[in-house]
Image (cartoon, rainbow, N blue to C red; front, side, top):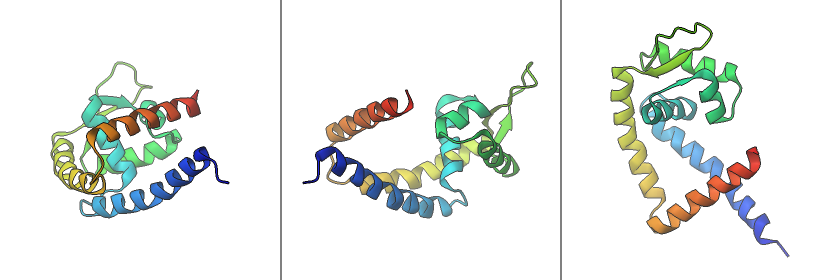
Length: 140
């Protein structure tokens, strides 16, 4: 007999790939992919961040973030924040980056609302809380 926790994680694995694949299809309309979108999201919601903070947020290595940030800089979406500490590379959205974020946000909001049809806000809040607790258990 399959245990509940086993079913839970199997469903999580079955959910992740199709979600990410479809998210990338939506992002491709704006010539972006998930890692770039995640950085734009973070910078839009938290103002600015170092490469280390962004790497920790995405749970990836710093070189991965460095490449993604370099591409976002080429596109004109992010820029360096002037800093006294030359070792710290702090980034923020440019005006163009803020505009692009707002445009892409509309597309992503439509996608996310569509796939959450039939799930109440209360259920969504419970799932958010549960996923946060699981993540905290994993990273501690």
